Length: 108
Figure 1 (cartoon, rainbow, N blue to C red):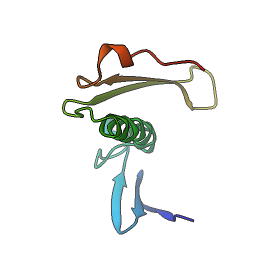
Figure 2: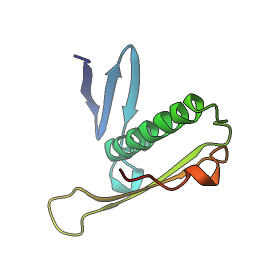
Figure 3: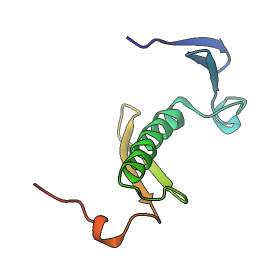
């Protein structure tokens, strides 16, 4: 099992240790933090977008297609009612190396 350790530092700051790497998370200055890193929510959504990018890149390479220019854009919204949570995530994949004939998902 993989192991990630998140530790409180100070203020709104946390650090996550992952396989010898450390990521600092904080809140924007306007929300009481010092803006020394992305928020945990931003990392959560970024991680999802990065997973989409990783598998898109692997798909392109597996099918001898060029991953150059592959871009994943991701947006999210918070729920308007409590408790605070991400309510909607939108992901767009721009893959210039993917032919038009492969852009629509196949069902079946």
